[in-house]
Length: 411
Image (cartoon, rainbow, N blue to C red; front, side, top):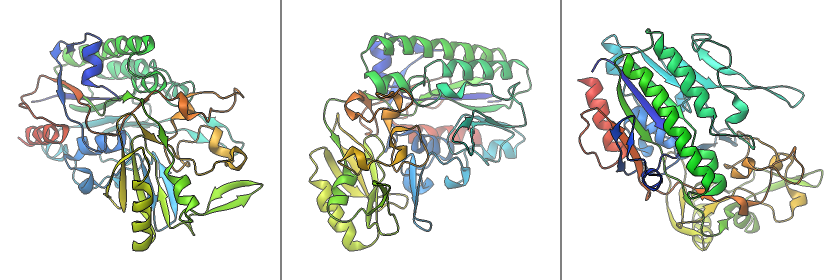
């Protein structure tokens, strides 16, 4: 193998493609494989880069709680958060070049090319839509992707078209890295908004297929082998929403402080905190007594299927029942909500907030209505889609498939 394009696709579920009549991607047959657990973006991409399970690469969800600084952080971009050697290291040791494009937790990776969304938050509360590129302008311009399509109420499947077009142009120049990892977020937004069977989702699948064809055609013309892999599969919301932090606050484990009648987290005094992330929620506890009390309280929630020992620094991990998911708010009275509750703030909220995909009554604010969410993920019981022309065997899950890829790169 001389050249390889690895395409990681958000929400590329095997069942979703089957219902849409898509049996092949880029001319290659699609087969189902089991995702890594928890089945969320950062965990899946860390496993893809390291061929390690979460307990070894250190990523428990899309968010982290930093005990030393009493801070919660979602979508941290530092590559040093992902532990373990990268599967491309033997390839690079033999002179191969590597590019990583639009992956989470990729900034600082020791690779030849690197591209990631990196907007600048201004002092006035605005945002400069900027893209980090190494080398500068490697994709031909300062901001090849319309980042307002990437997240929030204006998120749109066409963002993947921007990525596919920019990378196809990069490959066509003939001097791109021999090993390329590319992320396409195309399917994620409409599936969370509408569930798996809405006509808009069918249109998103067709859009995704066109993007894959565009990118892989450019890759094939330059002699690249192909691996296309979903990171998780979205399933329909058919049950209710759980609010673990409300339960912890009512029990005195989750502390808050009043600021202008709003209630902000007081993590210095908090004894138990749940970082809600779709259908999974790592729980961090201050001491063994708080851990056991949190376990008892959270296990009683009707939406919780399992409370198991935590991974990668968390004390516990909640897994939702099929069709249910976890929301991050800790308040009952909406007047207590912090100011960022109805804004797009993907980094500071102590949980992933799919409600940011909707505008609320005020068009400049996001909705707070959790009942609008129709699709969710995190459980590992819905297979993802895989298509490749590599000799990777019939690996039943993404971890073993990635280990086969690592062995191939080391060969």
